[in-house]
Image (cartoon, rainbow, N blue to C red; front, side, top):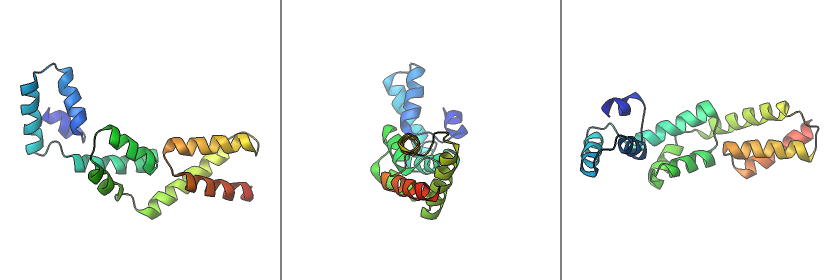
Length: 144
């Protein structure tokens, strides 16, 4: 389990599920988890920060999707808020605009409601804020 946690940042829930797959008893599982936490193999705050950086910088996820994924992994609200500060606002906006413009160009539909819907749906799936998306949509509709 040390290797499993050292190989890549893991949250408590992931490690617990891995132990469950090994069919260890409840007392053994608690003992192992306690050991891993005490020896800093599992650190929820560090996991959340790493997760935020990775998902935003490499998959270009927005804050909403990252927030939901961390909640799904039972990360505390305090750790989520701390982790979201890992993304500088300028970088966040730059990545959003780059992704939006690239997506706008790749949609083959003609200008109109169908193209707009595909554009908005894509960015919503990525987890960006509605207000940002519609501002960008207006800008791109006028510009093209």
